[in-house]
Image 1 (spheres, helix red, strand yellow):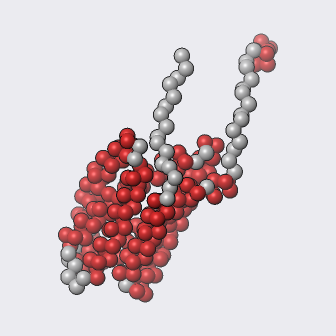
Image 2: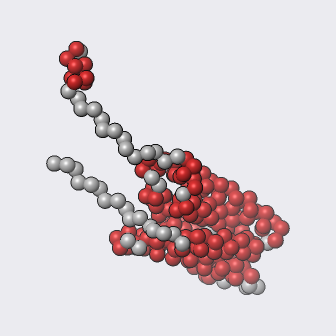
Image 3: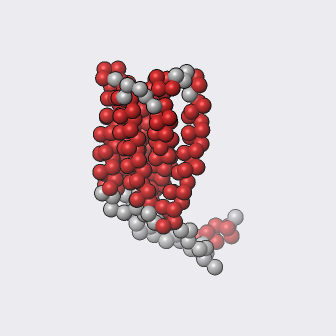
Length: 227
């Protein structure tokens, strides 16, 4: 035991001093690039929740499909959208064009909201059109849902990634609540078209905010282990 203590005291080298300062919580909260990501996850999940407040009834009216049979639409649409989202993400990462993929996905989301608003305003709803829009929605949603947490971890200072992801997850939860509550109130008092109109406004604001991003960092390569 005495020898071990001596080794620890006199042989084991001391840890090098930590030079980088830890970023404060307020610095992370006020970081412009992270604020864009936080608004994005709030908008994404708010739009999703508000849309699914009214979408089941829209599908019933358009296709006469009972609600307990909607899984026959959702399941294949989600599976196909998962396959369609992979190439844009892989190519964006490989070629360093994730910002373009990111902004394109928000633009696609906006087109879906506009299309949904136009479709439900028609006297005769096209069931096929709604399914196509639903597929486009999930493609955009899956790309954004998969890429945003990774981008937050890259944009955040190394010493504050936990705080950055905590804020991000909190904004996601707030978005879920706001979308469900806001969508329900709009649908109750103004009808389903108002829900998609609000979605268009939020998505357009997100598109403008995301387009002004300064940079979109690439995934860091693993450093080779020292010989």
